[in-house]
Length: 198
Image 1 (cartoon, rainbow, N blue to C red):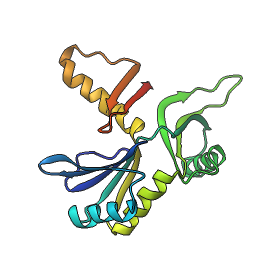
Image 2 (cartoon, one colour):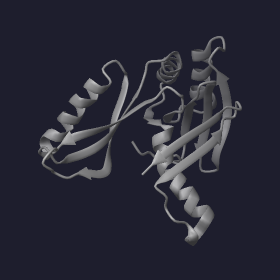
Image 3 (cartoon, rainbow, N blue to C red):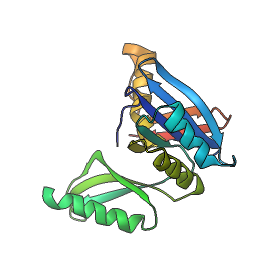
Image 4 (cartoon, one colour):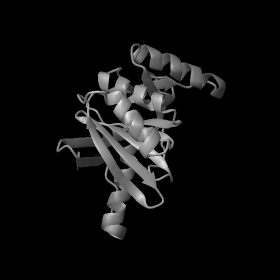
C-alpha cells in the first residue's frame, strides 16, 4: 500500500467528503490545481479534461480521505508461505463481501501460541464502499486514459508520515509514542482527525 507522495510527475486525486482535490506533483513540488465539488454539473468530463489536458495525462495516485472507510484487525493463523496469500484473500472477502476496494496490511505484532490460541499474524483489513464520490472519481480517471498508479487510504498512509513529521519537528529529543493524533484541515474548511495506535 505504501506509495511515495513525492514521486515526480504525478497527478494526485484526493477524495474528500466535500469534493475532489486535484494536485499536480512534479520536480518543483506539489500544486493544488482545483477542488471540484461533487455536485458540479458534468463532474466526470470536467475532471477528465483537467487530468488529460491540463495535467498531460500523468499517472494518477488516488487517495481516499472520506469518512466512510472501514477497518478491522484480523488474526491470520500460521500457515505456509504459499497458502498465506489465499487465506488472507478469503478472510478479506468474508470481512467485506460487498466492497469494491479491499486490502490487507500485515502488522508487526505477532500472536504467540498458547493453550487457548494458535500462533499467527495480525493484519489490518481495510475497505471502501462504492459511494457516488468513489464511482465518479474512478470514472473520470478511466476516461482520462492516464495510468492509475495506485489507490491509498489517507489514514493508513499518514501513519508513517506523522512519525517522520514529528521527528523532523522535535529532532533528537523526539520519543516515539504508541498514540499518534493527526489533525488536518481540508481546503474546503473541513477538519480531519486521524488517531493511530502502534
